[in-house]
Image 1 (tube, one colour):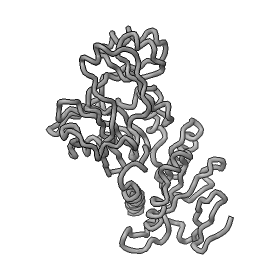
Image 2 (tube, rainbow, N blue to C red):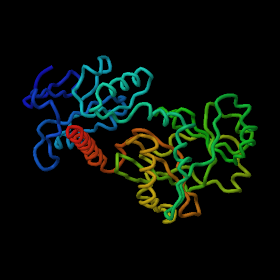
Image 3 (cartoon, rainbow, N blue to C red):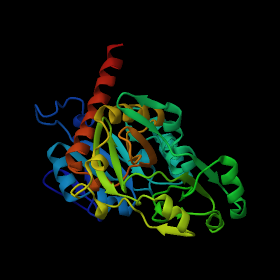
Image 4 (cartoon, rainbow, N blue to C red):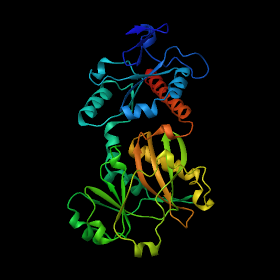
Length: 354
């Protein structure tokens, strides 16, 4: 290791750790954002997968963050978390009971550090049985449109029971089959479309079956970063006509369909299909989900029922998604991190008053 002229310690893997004078470590709350120089940097400790580090911690983000007084520091998961830092924010996307335990203990011991996001809240999005329940419960309907979830059924085992379970639940074919566990892996994003009863026997539980809703082959990926909302269009599964449904048979398997390469923002689309969901509707939906899920970093996959203007369905929710695919994500995310610290400072000021 060696020290740079900026009093930053560079580790063997290139991670920068900040050594500051003792009087500066006490609090970042003396800073006034975008008005006066930052007295000390805001330290964001991160525990991310190698894939997430590559896609999220891009040089442009780190450079912009540094200019705003934010430094990203890697958390060493082989060392006690309490011995590292000090951190103002902990940013993470890891799985496993042990990591959740460590993070929960850290949150209780360091209430002044913001953990993005609470590990227990994230668990709801790792299971597609509970993922969409918050949307279903809110019954969002107003003058800007209606938002619901497709009718769905969870199958945990025994593929031979699927046809009977589908009939009993009253689900209509075709059905989209998704893995029950949504852990961010490539396999968890694989989809299958089952056209007939016999095809249902070929599916592999545990899985979730959702009624397929024709939506013009386009979905809206809605990114949530705190209060900020950004929407992009992605190509999706094509509509299924009655004729195709009567003639088709079997299971059609698809890889992840809403990837960056499938952007539909610049495509020549029917305006009725391409029109984004109304902004007031998205703002209300995002607000309700932030409150209901207890999360600040997630995205939604939303579709509009083909032939309607105001009937929307949320078909997936993902925690800490691929923000690198979101336009201007560097500015959105750094502004969000600054707002988190501002909120911390306001809370401390209120506590100090009493």
